[in-house]
Length: 298
Ligand code: ATP
Image (cartoon, rainbow, N blue to C red):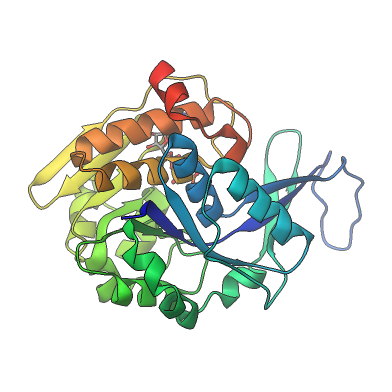
């Protein structure tokens, strides 16, 4: 394999303005200077994996505009192979974020080019899929595109899905997941109702839908790894959390990479928990993701 991990997913420019108070209908408020950060779950996962040392490629779509160039530059700076990133068709996806002094935010996402990553684009990227040991996806691109990834998955290639933002999933997508990685909210939507009992019970309900394995992330409580054989808790590393943005993406990327490298699921999740722990000790998403040396030093 040329790549340890291929991430198929979104790339967004996060446009962040600090405000004293978030505006109501018809209201204008003045805010801080604009900060532009590279984001999107796909872009975040790719940067997280590359920074850890995984040979990583990204299949995504950005606009032929300044935000698109910024996103490509930040991917390349992290060491991601961006030959599979398509350019044009719509403006680069953006998230407009206002944050008030208490840290509460309001977000508007314009998917833009992410919404134009099509099944046809996946078919055209066949060589990239064949060159990758693990393929990781999220749901900030059209579901039909994720379905095509699953259909095109070469024999022996592992598929990892973080269904975020969550929606009900077709059986063929669920059956390909090894693992399906969810937090509590995502688990609830995938199961399609209130979750009863403990995270172990949620994992059993999810496994009944067909994935080969399930990982439930539990924030400061760590994670749970589950297969038909049973489940194992992976404790979080105790740290001073500063900003949890992107922790789930960093966790997912690290887990996908380690599983592809042959680690046992619990061992891979323990490593991913260390990566997530470093990410929460620093502000921001992609800028907060650690190198392998920083994970070792934790
Ligand atoms: P996101 O908010 O980025 O979508 P998520 O809800 O998918 O994230 P989390 O459970 O918040 O995922 O975080 C992923 C992993 O990162 C956790 O399983 C845990 O190992 C680690 N982590 C998250 N928050 C903390 C924390 N406060 N302290 C230590 N580790 C943490």
